[in-house]
Length: 578
Image (cartoon, rainbow, N blue to C red; front, side):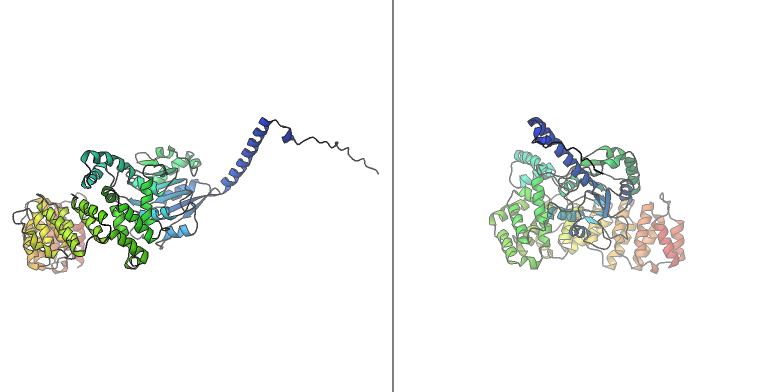
């Protein structure tokens, strides 16, 4: 059988359809084609799961709420904390993890840059915590494709994580520093306003510095809800469609409405155009792993050459970095030369010493003096001389506070300043605070006067004596007995409690002293006095005085406690089994 072949269309030289289009139509065709390709690429990217990194140092409630509502095929969760491993954040960085969303759950201590600034757990058996310094080091050290580089949003579930209150960039404080460095008052006020913006240093600002260019950072400006409560709010938000907003790279305020009565707030990461961007770059020079020790010391030298008011802003960073330089690093030829360049910079040294001597705040002045010694701008003898000059200025003040006494006692913890006390004279005609400063420097006569102040009716004097005794506990039995007898005669309950608290850290073992305190218990005028006595006895060698009679006296004479069972009950139980 023969088959007829189909008739083929004649071949012509007609150009393809695209070539037949007009110029305008070609442009539209190309745009549509590109859009289709873009949609295809976007769909393919969207298909890749988003990485939700979690740092859980306290409760997992918030993390679990996100996990319940985000589809597993679109979001993969990665817990960065590795239990029992202190360098878990660095470990995540080395593994090449890239976070699209970051959720941090933990109590937050953000009161100051000088240590203690961290996320932590309320559970005593938990050893995991997240220092903000470590977050800062990772953020400053990683390249453009690092752990935090592609973050679209961050959730900080901790109190005060986005607190806007300045830690040190308060215009009034900066103005005082500018006046100390030689600026006229009017000019200082103007410069202070500008510098307070440039050196923004609140908890919120620090998070913005760490999470640079992140479109949305959620956190709390004051108290945050507990984990289970926060999880309940998140459930309601996600049930209302909130999951659509996660990892979009767009800041949205809708979630804020689901945390009623709490301070959930929203900010964005720092950009290079922000006023404090240069401040971040300066801070990163202290912690960037990519910089050598020599480069970091050179950066410090350049910073020290600025206006001393700016140096003051960086004081804690300077202290911590110079303190971290061990002997081995200091002896490296390049580092040694860089440190020598600083120590031999006479002009900067002169301006710095003038600034510290003009400082009206003794704690800051003492820190500036210690830093000058660390930079080899002061010899050991000059260092002691500057500290003694500062103490002399404190003694010349009409009022000395408990904080002033605490400072001097801490400065002389190793008795390096004892030799200078003779040159300071006597505080016989001055207040108890003045006597306590001299006692911190080893004056026996003033030590006796402070002990007398512990049992005085003047509460500020009792506070000063209490602070002094934290540094110099009573080790003479006769003095302990005298103090206990004096406390017995005190008429004011609040001062009596403070005096008793001063003895609580002594872990008494002298029977006569303990018996004196038990005589105070039945005649005490407040339950707080009785609790303070119980606090002393429970820390003491109470086995010496344990007896059925004492137990009955504690039970029969105890004043009613508005809070119910307390430390007195604990003492009674221990005496009963002793």
